[in-house]
Image (cartoon, rainbow, N blue to C red; front, top):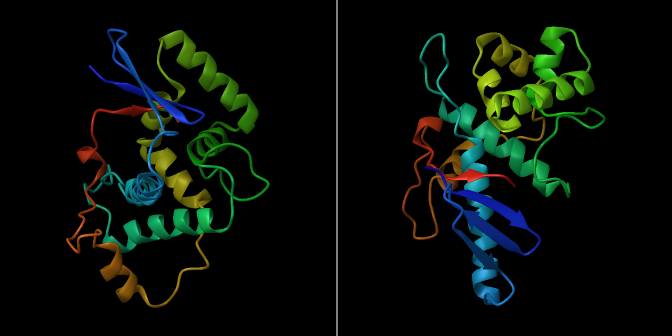
Length: 190
């Protein structure tokens, strides 16, 4: 059984599969805890972006360089002043990377593929996110995603210092970046 979490303005509503819910409101939280939560949230978001699954053909885990590239790309996206939480491709493109990749493989527009994904999700009683995650695991979709993924041209040359810093949490202890199989049971809708 999974607990769903939905962000609604300045609250987070947690709901169990049995309908029990709890609402967390950030307004009465101290400024210090709000500030820490912001940094913890960004740290977790960036680390999650580096949770790259194993290559389905070779079984090879992502390298530290590949993981760092994902962290760097998302971090640079946020530091650019972007208002969106999720990277939706390069400027002027519509749809997420998986959706754009599947659309390209099927020879359809992103809008048409998006409509098809929505219809299939409704028909199967599954979330759009789950369907896209399943599609992203296909080797042909992965290859197309690699082809369409924007290249991070702002990466600094001093990787060794960044690698060392990124491996430490606030207490000075190392944070391990595992593969996506180590992720928990919490479903996030926002």
